[in-house]
Image (cartoon, rainbow, N blue to C red; front, top):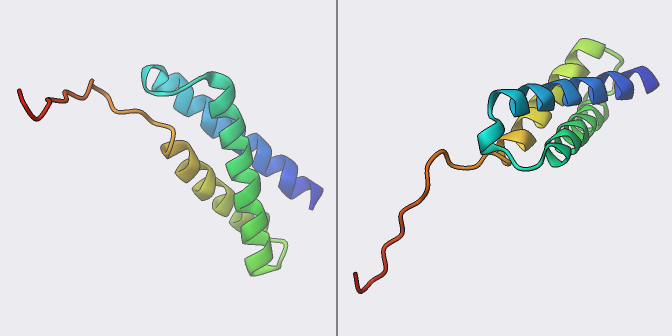
Length: 89
């Protein structure tokens, strides 16, 4: 169980670092991105371990990667500025 948690946290940090290094202009602060990646991976490993209840590390890490990627995708900002027009313009 400890190996699963440590592996999923490292996987989440690696995914967060990759997302931040590829899209630094579309991400918020680096500390928020890294903590979201690690937290999402830990939560994904917990959910996968609870749902499947067996010690296959590859499947648990796949679940951790899916949840970490989904949580990191929520942090991405739009590429361009949104142009808002008032109702009277």
